[in-house]
Length: 185
Ligand SMILES: [Zn+2]
Ligand SMILES: [Zn+2]
Image (cartoon, rainbow, N blue to C red; front, side, top):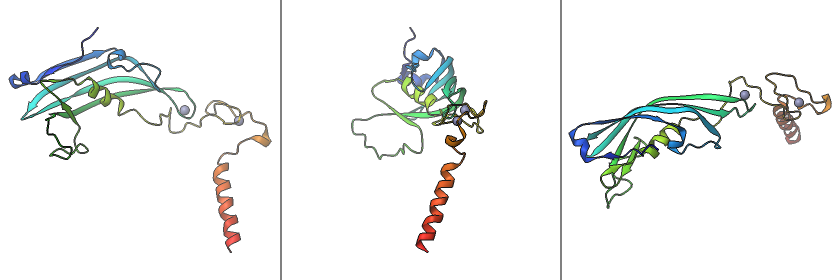
């Protein structure tokens, strides 16, 4: 079992500390069963250095996720390869939210006491780039809501009278607009 990453802030006064990540998805609690899975291992390199009273964490992450296309449910591989940097600030007893740091402007984390436990932040950094609406491609035509045919591969099998017309919703909407216009006139 790999130990969680723990950075001794005081030790950073003697120099930066670099950590090599090579973890199974379980390490970050990224269990399957979410709307993503992880293929293979999560790799990266993270360096911690002291910048006055802040700790700078910078590095890169490399992992491959798998998600379902929201239109056709095909599995889509989503590689996440990113560089990042964020600061950790010591949370003082008298810390007030709106002090010098604007959390929207910089990526900021906090630590209490002598150690930084960055695993949660690293996990967030990985997940934040996942798409909300994964697609196998911009052109994906999805599944027919009537017969379930994968319209990327096969024609719709719906009987002609119940065939959901492509763009039917839009047409209906514009029909209505026309009708309302006639009524108003
Ligand atoms: Zn698709
Ligand atoms: Zn159909």
